Image (cartoon, rainbow, N blue to C red; front, side):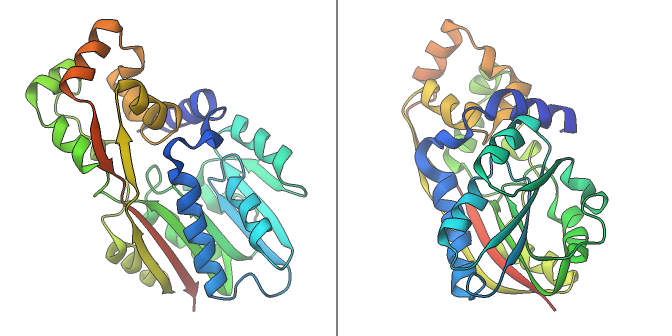
Length: 270
């Protein structure tokens, strides 16, 4: 998936819908990341310099400020300028840049951070690309808060998609969700990649929030406008589906009871 495709999806489609958080998955997932930071006592010290990579609309930094007993010094980077426009309005004192997370070394040169956060970024930038760059941004004893999907997400949709008829109808051919995302397999892979860059895993859990897709429109609100599967949906042309295709999908696919699969991991630099 190209940077141009991801930029278009999040800048032009998702930015104005992201905070609506259909089915509440984003908010509940970020809360788990914050809970891990709290349990570690990370929010009880002095000023906390936090770099949010792929910060979107600044939702996590806002939640972190509300949860913290100490001042947060916020920094951010995101590919979508429309997302950052919302973040700048939301976060007082934010220092943020438009940029590609895969080239993290190019931003905030010479600065070290107490915590670097990557929340739902590893679907588009491999954590194996991110990890060495994040390790260089962290001070000794600094933390990496990772929250993101795994390849076990959407099992019901994946199973439905195996139907040859549905693949033909959707235009998917042999393409699956995993073809367009770079998520790690599970907690074990996350720990392995962090460990290779000198970070010890301090907290880890897997979160499996249930999802309900009553019909095609409910799926599009979550997967397309909500940002979870936007580039994939565009690549299949489903966002342009006419009334006949929608009618057919509603009868052949939906309703669907499904689940996401999300890891929340807190690592500390040795």
